[in-house]
Image: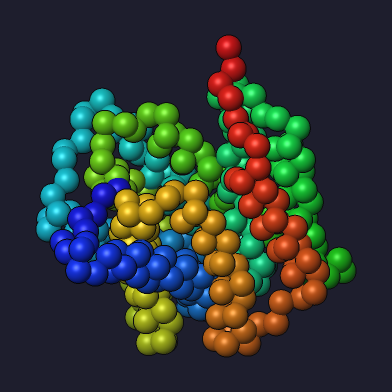
Amino acid sequence: METRCVPFDGLKNPSRPRVKVILATMFVILCWAYSPIGIRIGLQAYEPGQLALMRFLIASVFMVVVAMVKGISRPRLGDLPLLAVLGFFAVSLHHIALNYGQRGVSAGAASVLAQSTPLFSTLLAHFVFKDRVGAWQWGCVLCGLLGAAVVVTGDRGLGDMDARGLLILLAALSWSVYFALQKHHTHRYDGLTLVCYTVWSGTLLLFIFAPGMLSAVRQAAASVNLAVLVLGIFPSALAYLAWAYVLAHSDVSRASTALYLIPPTAMLMACLVLAERPAAMVMVGAVIVLASVLALNVGPVSVAKAG
């Protein structure tokens, strides 16, 4: 995805772009940290499928406005199946699994498990795309999965463990499949065009959950509908535009490292908004997961093409 930078006089004020990047990064962190909190609130009135559809109907309308203002290219007829698959993994499956998973997992724990995507990306690179993965990367993946197990078991305690926490890992796997497909098959489209068609196609697939949604909207409290509106506009649309700006004006690896602030930010938000207190084991598991993902990204070159 590409966004235009507001022109500036670099000689007069060279620090302005850096300040904008920092502010945009903070905005992204806050938006994506809010996502599990918004989901938790939305689930008070909506079924998981209805919540996903409602969220992305809002995001789709917003992206229509963005597309009209910025301009996007038309999709090639032969690419429509691929765009539908991208929408399925990035929107439909990812958010259905996320919403059902959060029925049994706290918002803070969900934010940690959602950061495990790079672990699954490494597994996909090895088993699907036949890339070589070194011992360092295997160690990081195993440690990260161990940390995820600690989070799932520690969120409610062994005696009250909810297997739906595993659905958050399915959501992370779905997201990693989306990134892999995007990387290998979508070089003909710019970022904004790709995101728009991915969101729209994924939203169309979610229409199987449309029955009863209007009734749920009318019955939901105003505070719940407001939380869902914020969920649709900020984490699902504006955050992606802001992230595109960050990636266009800073080092990708350095910018991505900032995303590890999302889980602690989400835990703080959940504490303030939902009165959730993360269990000690969740905190331990969070450290293991985030340290493993960070080590995976900053360690030795992880993947070399086989053959």
